[in-house]
Image (cartoon, rainbow, N blue to C red; front, side, top):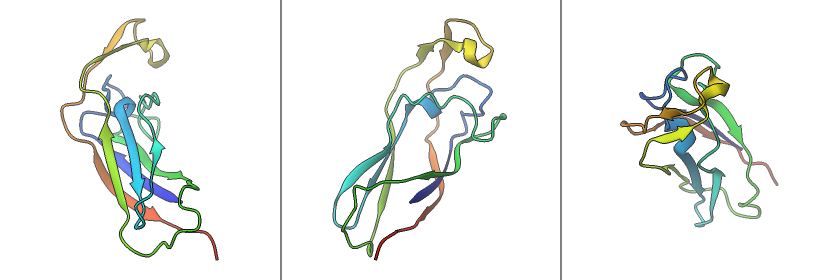
Length: 122
C-alpha cells in the first residue's frame, strides 16, 4: 500500500490547470520491478479536499500487486511524470465553466510531499 500526498503551486483546485490531469506516478521496487499507480489523463481537476487546494492527492492510498513475492527491504523509487507539455482544451462545464475552457499547462513542477509504504504478506 502506498499513501501519497502530491501538490503543485499552479493547481489550486479552482483554476483550470493541467497539473492534476497530467500527472502519472510510477513506483520501482528494490528488485527493479516498475508499475504505474496512476496514469495521465485521470481528470484530477478538483483539489484533493474538494476546495481550492494545492493538493492534487492528499493522503491518497494506492494498492499494487506487481511486487508480489519480492523482498520489500531496500530502496523504493517513486517518480512523478508530467505527461503533457501543452495547454488542454476540455469541457469545463463539470467544473462550472464553459464548454471549451482551456486548462493552462502547469508552469511549476509537481511535488511529492509525503509518502508511506506498507507491505502485506508473510
